[in-house]
Image 1: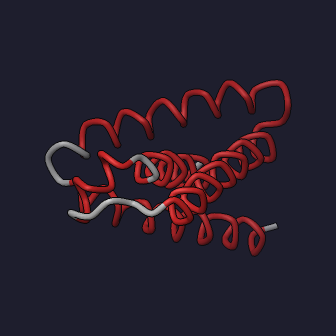
Image 2: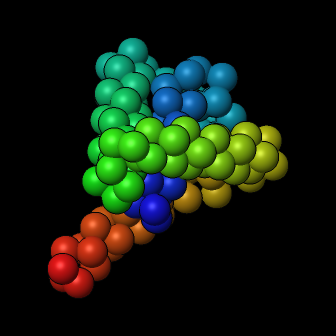
Image 3: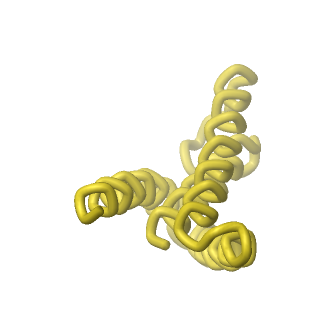
Length: 111
């Protein structure tokens, strides 16, 4: 479940940073076209991986439901954090990836 939420948060944050308005809010500079495409690709891949983590953890019967809940929780956290601490919101996306990697590694070791 930690991998699901961490990857969902990272994916949503990267999709958010691909937009010029939010990128300016965080960095103070406009986002380049190539960098925006790479952020959109990274965000889409992270969301797809979060879906895969949800299905792997809970199966096809409950995995998509858990994924929708996890994406909703991650989106709520991002929406509440972005206006007040935009740099922290971006930093947490990297922390979310780290948590996901540690969760998958711990799950592999415990099997």
